[in-house]
Length: 115
Length: 175
Image (cartoon, rainbow over all chains, first blue to last red; front, side, top):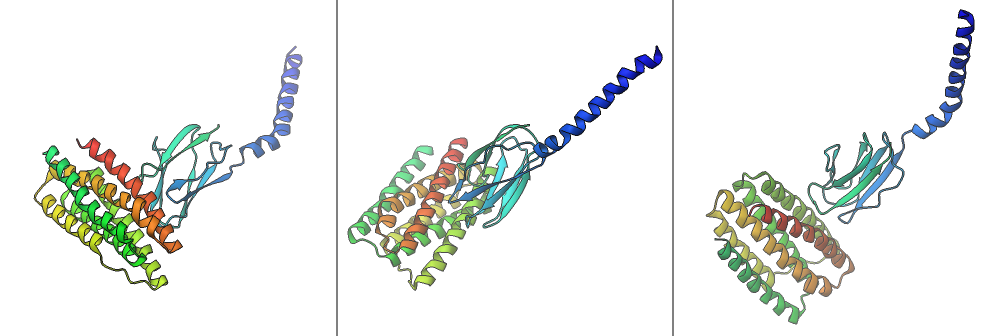
């Protein structure tokens, strides 16, 4: 009885392990972090690319001769961007994140982050 | 107090717009346009430095720092451009009127302190940017002949419009 009881459990474990192995390449590909670029030019944040997920990086490129920042309203990131420089943010949570420039508050944008 | 300041702001606009209108009739040349734009920038840098010396308000100080940095950056670009073009900025009635008005205002602001200073500085920043932006839109940009000068003035206007909105919001917050 004991042996009989164990057998299905063991085969189930094996099945789960096999399933995990089979799935892992796909899930690894989906989770591989990506880098998305947002360009600041002439006092405007350029378009934000779609498909951003938690763990991805935003590369902020400041083409202006003015100092800017990319600052999340929810305070989850704050990147100082001196003239003609770039900076990075790793996105740590999902949802809608509104960002702006602390020096020029009229400059705003939105990140839509999936889990 | 506020009414008095509003009146001062209104009279400043009238005083400043008259020479600009006179210049419009005479159509300023690029050397004069460069001088007006550079002078306006320098006057706002001076006003920002006065605010940094007098104000203790975090938001006002941050705004003043931005004015000093941004107008400094634009003027640096303007200087590089006139050098490249071989143009010597030319003094003119509009630059003189802007300078006189700014000096009078600085004297007036010098007598104030605390919240009174902060409010008066921010209200003047609203009025000053409104005046300069109006001049850029109606006179300086349309009358500029050189394409690079026109382009720099356009970039300046985009920036100064943002300054004006920022100033309006801060002036409202300080009320």
